[in-house]
Length: 358
Ligand code: DOR
Ligand code: ZN
Image (cartoon, rainbow, N blue to C red):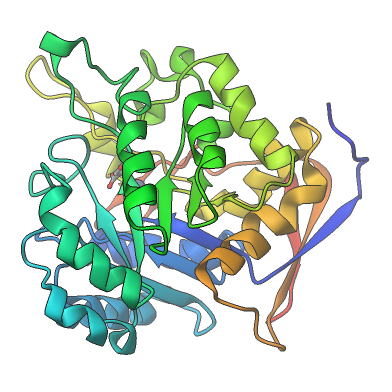
């Protein structure tokens, strides 16, 4: 249901990705430049390294490395801490000055590097109150761990998390909370039912994948898994409606090709879909496919910035994308040390970046 013609253009001022994994070491050196390559000027960086980022010092050192790796001085890296017992309420007041914008919570065991994740939110009451007072955002990986005695598995793990979101939003009405990478109609409804302190990121890949795409295709396997066609439609409709609570967080999560493709009987494949290098054209293509191309700038910059209170600078760069007849996505990105396969490898995207104002 495209609403555009070949040659049509759209402009976005300083596109912002409010959820991205930039890794460390050789993989980070390979993938960090792809933020800018994909058309983005702001990266909200996830802290699930090994060991996780739990101190301002670690975050600042990590930010410095990312700037060095970036290849562009224009990309802003916003840092987060990993929710754990290593975070102290008395420190929160110093976080803003150290560039910390948010705290990411991973329920234990639900995804990549979540072994040190949390088991209860109650014990963080004091921390959340301080975060509320000092305007630090809480980012939620919204799944509960699988528990077969309760019939919980990857297909209902997000929906069963939603009461936690509602409780937190009510208990801390001034704490800004983001439900990350929503995948279900239930999540969209739950976010809409919460107050203005709650927003929600949506990835590019969840706008197109369903269960059928990852069952048997490891490069489409990510957490939370893509759900039903009706869920995908709800995500698309949330964007199309222009509701400012919903904005882009790519959850671009690179893993070396081998960890994606070599599952054995005792070890599965790594969870994560890699979209950074193609992100803005991909999002334009997808929004166009369901009649929402006119929401491109709101979804990829304005709404996220408004929620995070990160206004555009007066000289902020503009990126123009144009509808073209098919650009083939590279099969792999590699350095001497690492190789990663992007989402939609060898497939074709109908939008491309034609002009970047530095
Ligand atoms: O698919 C995912 N990959 N989901 C996450 O929550 C984490 C991420 C990763 O770090 O690889
Ligand atoms: Zn993530």
